[in-house]
Amino acid sequence: MPYNWVRIRSSPPRERRDEVKEICRRNGGRLCENQIYYDENDQAHALVELPAEDAKRQALLQELGATAFIGLVHADEKAGGMRPPPSKQ
Image (cartoon, rainbow, N blue to C red):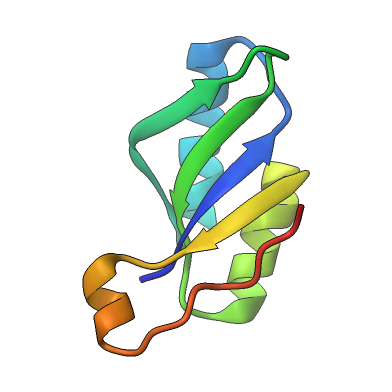
C-alpha cells in the first residue's frame, strides 16, 4: 500500500489530527499511527496510507487540502517491484 507525507493546512493540532483521520477514513485511506508533525513555519505534515484506486487517492489529497506530498512505498513493496505514487512539490 503506498504512503505519502502530505503537507496540509494547519489548525489546532489535536483537532486537525481528528479531521485528518476522518477525511482519510471517508476516502479509503488511513492516518498512520497519528503521525502529524509541525515544522518551524507551523505547517502540518501527515503520514497517510493511500487507497489503491487513483480516483480515491486524488479525492483524499484534495479533501485534505494537500499543498505538497511525497509518494513512498515500504521497503518490502519496493523489493516486490511496486513504485511509489507520484509526488507534488
